[in-house]
Length: 445
Image 1 (cartoon, helix red, strand yellow):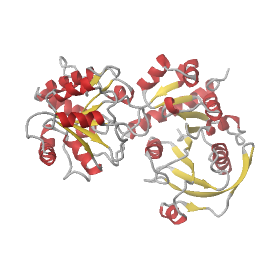
Image 2 (cartoon, rainbow, N blue to C red):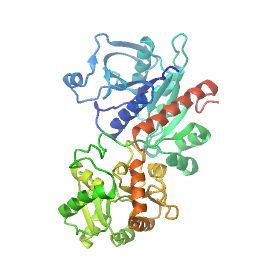
Image 3 (cartoon, one colour):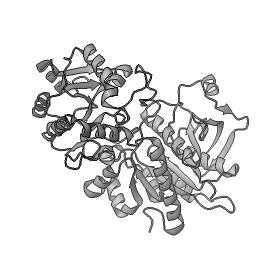
Image 4 (tube, rainbow, N blue to C red):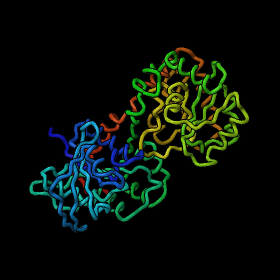
């Protein structure tokens, strides 16, 4: 079969723009290309990079501008072309008056595809630049071609304002991708708002696909912040754990080492006190620039339990050392699924303890001591008292010897990469293409 021609519109992609969303959009497009699609990514030139910066990134300026006259406006846009990092997907960067408008950027992307004979079989657009979905449906395709199928990727429904452009995109999309299957299930079951009501009108069009980890940053085999390649096992972690305990002034004991990653907004004072007495060493890890006062509970626990709890701000090298050395990674927040997966700890053999929600519920199977199966420890997301109970279950498992070693090996082997996410998104694209041929678009009668 010929490869699927895919056109993706993203308002921001790396390395032109910074931020987790830009990097995740780039990672997904690369993964789609590796899954066999011929991907072209269209974006606008962000403020900041100079012409010399774009040249160094391999974005060559075309001498012929794009003169655009469409129902969404007229413009003369400068076209720069190159490849995403690794060469997997084509990258088109448009600049000029009007390129800041999503509608005009989408019209330009389709016009370029029509002129160059690369009319897409499938278009994808993110929620911050959704106009491509509706325009792909309304634009007259080139002779012999059909309107492409459309996939709309929503990062976080709770923060997506219902704009006219987003409403039109939902009406035109053949598939809607949310960043977690359990997140999609929760929204369809108990979510609120106009956006959720549109989902419920056609729930078979909604899919949840977890994001992948940033493999360039989190890879135990070639992590530059570790002394060498890490074997994700009890023995492999032992020297890292001894060095970290020494550097942080923790007692050299057999207590499991637990890093608490991300906000601790599910944790209350009683649950925190119970954690401090759960027989572990707790490391509350804060990113530089965290909101003042947002980690007060962790600071209080560290003050009250100096031999068992630390609250620290970690730069990237220290964060990598902590994740690699820890036995458990505790997540005490309802993960709002954006960007990369939070489960970057798993390739390091660091066992997750997490709420049964979002990407955690998709990737983690709760430990069963009877069958000695599972890949982590889950707790109900709305019950803080279950957090220390889950940690105590993990402590008992860590004392089990061989079953724990098997658990760590399974955790390290779980595929949370963008490769798997890309294959799932590619299959969703094929679903959308079949739906385009068989039924009316999302929201249409």
